Image 1 (cartoon, rainbow, N blue to C red):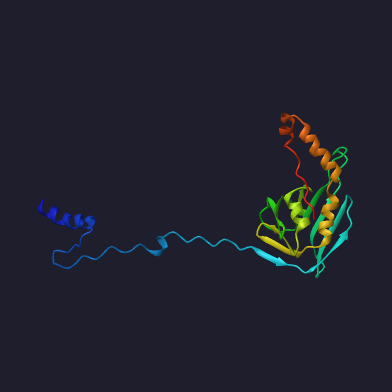
Image 2 (cartoon, one colour):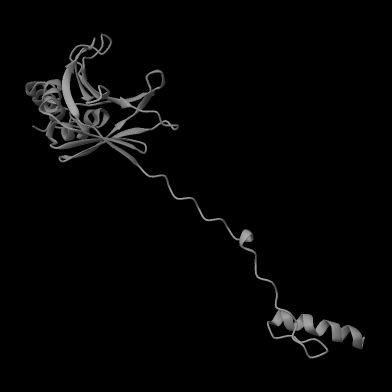
Length: 216
């Protein structure tokens, strides 16, 4: 029994954190530190955004449905495409036109939106990937924040998709196309008046009064 107590005493002292000595009086070795490999690995840094600045010019381009302009780089690459698309035959009489923005994209993950950054503000467009063309495109309303940013922006136009950002100079052609694509002001006034005269229930169902277009 005495021998058991003698052997158990050093273990009890270790558990309590005190210094332990052997029967000969020499200090017992300290526990080994935890190896570095046992510690949690550091998280890898997040990937950085790739920004590409293009020099070039805007020009009119052919399209089967509406009006289209394209920014072509000095290397001859079509970088940005902006289209005022006419409504299709199934949209009905008086259906509004829509803007369509496209740019090349070869990322591994499908983006959910295209970001627009201009001096007049920013906007976001719901994105759709065109795998066969290695491009991403988005359709948006002519009275949206994205449309106003395009029409009123000056200087650089930044198109962001995922971690890829294209920077191109804007042009008067961009503002002209957006303005030409919007419905006539008379139609907008009629729509606003109709929304004001409608019962509250009808207005709630339709989503309220339409957004008044901003000027360039």
